[in-house]
Length: 114
Length: 113
Image (cartoon, rainbow over all chains, first blue to last red; front, side, top):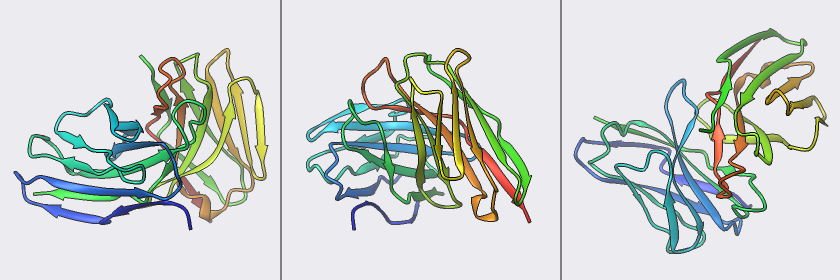
């Protein structure tokens, strides 16, 4: 079964702690993306990666970091510098970022920071 | 800059047609997409339309694109309670060539039995 997995589904952290959200895909897609979703808002792009060992900041990258050491994995770290980290985080992938823009999404991770 | 706007809420009766509207600003968008999100879940790609098309039909779904007015709509025929969800319109950032999608705020569709 091909798809995108995100774990865990729910995550709770204390303020001041860094936390890493996992995203794995077995679709052999080159491009991967991280979005943040807040109630009543659309998705906002945090970081994206068009190819292994390369990534770019999206619209709201401050307080987040990523790595892309393997094609199938694109973990997102929410650092203590992120002022309002509680949100629903969605990972997506696409075959490539130029020819095909269809993005396929994982089930999401709901992060709550108290 | 690039922007996508949608109305926030639509309520219909089961069996009626639903029409969800979207406007966008980037005239160089290559593709426009409709995604569906059920509660607590990720986004599911419903359909998409290439920018040189006016209409695309896929079973109960009809997408209409008015490129002159930068207006996109999704019509769901014979709406069912299982269609209750949030629907997102998205455009590809045609001028940026990075695969970025710009999403609207989402339209919550409520289907009453």
